[in-house]
Length: 120
Image (cartoon, rainbow, N blue to C red; front, side):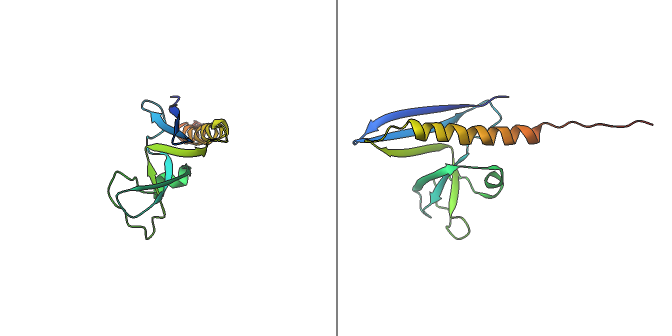
Protein backbone atom coordinates (compact mmCIF):
# COMPACT_ATOMS: atom_id res chain seq x y z
CA UNK A 1 0.00 0.00 0.00
CA UNK A 2 1.45 3.42 -0.91
CA UNK A 3 2.54 5.75 1.85
CA UNK A 4 2.17 9.51 2.14
CA UNK A 5 4.15 12.28 3.80
CA UNK A 6 2.70 15.43 5.27
CA UNK A 7 5.25 18.22 4.75
CA UNK A 8 4.79 21.74 6.12
CA UNK A 9 7.01 24.75 5.48
CA UNK A 10 6.92 27.94 7.56
CA UNK A 11 9.13 30.97 8.02
CA UNK A 12 10.01 31.09 11.73
CA UNK A 13 12.51 33.60 13.19
CA UNK A 14 13.94 34.38 9.74
CA UNK A 15 14.59 30.70 8.96
CA UNK A 16 12.59 28.14 7.03
CA UNK A 17 11.22 25.39 9.23
CA UNK A 18 10.32 22.23 7.30
CA UNK A 19 8.42 19.57 9.23
CA UNK A 20 7.43 16.16 7.91
CA UNK A 21 5.40 13.24 9.23
CA UNK A 22 4.30 9.93 7.75
CA UNK A 23 0.55 9.84 7.17
CA UNK A 24 -0.87 6.66 8.78
CA UNK A 25 -2.17 3.92 6.51
CA UNK A 26 0.74 3.06 4.23
CA UNK A 27 3.62 0.61 4.38
CA UNK A 28 5.96 3.02 6.20
CA UNK A 29 6.20 2.95 9.98
CA UNK A 30 5.65 6.33 11.62
CA UNK A 31 9.12 6.60 13.23
CA UNK A 32 11.46 6.86 10.23
CA UNK A 33 13.24 10.14 10.93
CA UNK A 34 16.72 9.97 12.47
CA UNK A 35 17.73 12.57 15.05
CA UNK A 36 20.77 13.00 17.26
CA UNK A 37 20.26 11.52 20.71
CA UNK A 38 20.89 14.12 23.41
CA UNK A 39 20.53 11.65 26.28
CA UNK A 40 17.90 13.95 27.77
CA UNK A 41 14.18 14.47 27.34
CA UNK A 42 14.95 16.87 24.45
CA UNK A 43 15.24 15.60 20.89
CA UNK A 44 18.44 16.41 19.03
CA UNK A 45 18.88 17.81 15.53
CA UNK A 46 17.46 16.05 12.49
CA UNK A 47 20.06 13.81 10.86
CA UNK A 48 18.25 12.06 8.00
CA UNK A 49 15.80 9.36 7.01
CA UNK A 50 16.20 5.84 8.34
CA UNK A 51 17.15 2.90 6.16
CA UNK A 52 16.14 -0.73 6.71
CA UNK A 53 19.04 -1.43 9.07
CA UNK A 54 18.24 1.67 11.15
CA UNK A 55 14.63 0.57 11.67
CA UNK A 56 15.80 -2.65 13.28
CA UNK A 57 18.53 -1.26 15.52
CA UNK A 58 17.62 2.29 16.56
CA UNK A 59 15.37 3.09 19.47
CA UNK A 60 12.31 5.28 19.03
CA UNK A 61 12.44 8.51 21.06
CA UNK A 62 9.11 9.15 22.77
CA UNK A 63 9.97 12.07 25.02
CA UNK A 64 12.05 10.28 27.65
CA UNK A 65 15.82 10.22 27.93
CA UNK A 66 17.61 7.38 26.14
CA UNK A 67 21.22 6.74 27.21
CA UNK A 68 23.67 7.93 24.57
CA UNK A 69 26.03 4.97 25.00
CA UNK A 70 25.34 2.79 21.98
CA UNK A 71 22.52 5.13 20.92
CA UNK A 72 24.10 8.05 19.09
CA UNK A 73 20.92 8.46 17.06
CA UNK A 74 17.23 7.80 17.69
CA UNK A 75 14.14 7.49 15.51
CA UNK A 76 11.23 9.91 15.77
CA UNK A 77 7.86 10.36 14.10
CA UNK A 78 8.57 13.89 12.92
CA UNK A 79 11.40 15.51 10.99
CA UNK A 80 12.13 19.15 11.77
CA UNK A 81 14.65 20.72 9.43
CA UNK A 82 15.84 24.32 9.72
CA UNK A 83 16.94 26.02 6.49
CA UNK A 84 18.58 29.44 6.28
CA UNK A 85 16.19 32.07 4.87
CA UNK A 86 18.60 32.92 2.06
CA UNK A 87 18.05 29.39 0.70
CA UNK A 88 14.84 27.88 -0.52
CA UNK A 89 13.57 24.77 1.27
CA UNK A 90 12.79 23.06 -2.06
CA UNK A 91 16.05 21.09 -2.25
CA UNK A 92 15.65 19.88 1.34
CA UNK A 93 12.08 18.76 0.63
CA UNK A 94 13.14 17.01 -2.60
CA UNK A 95 15.94 15.14 -0.81
CA UNK A 96 13.61 14.14 2.03
CA UNK A 97 10.98 12.83 -0.40
CA UNK A 98 13.64 10.92 -2.37
CA UNK A 99 15.01 9.25 0.78
CA UNK A 100 11.56 8.31 2.08
CA UNK A 101 10.69 6.93 -1.36
CA UNK A 102 13.82 4.72 -1.26
CA UNK A 103 12.84 3.41 2.17
CA UNK A 104 9.30 2.71 0.98
CA UNK A 105 10.62 0.84 -2.05
CA UNK A 106 12.92 -1.21 0.19
CA UNK A 107 10.05 -2.10 2.52
CA UNK A 108 7.80 -3.05 -0.38
CA UNK A 109 10.47 -5.35 -1.82
CA UNK A 110 10.74 -7.35 1.39
CA UNK A 111 6.97 -7.52 1.86
CA UNK A 112 6.47 -8.96 -1.62
CA UNK A 113 7.54 -12.46 -2.40
CA UNK A 114 7.11 -14.92 -5.22
CA UNK A 115 7.53 -18.64 -4.86
CA UNK A 116 8.01 -21.06 -7.69
CA UNK A 117 7.18 -24.55 -6.55
CA UNK A 118 7.89 -27.53 -8.75
CA UNK A 119 5.42 -30.32 -8.25
CA UNK A 120 6.61 -33.72 -9.51
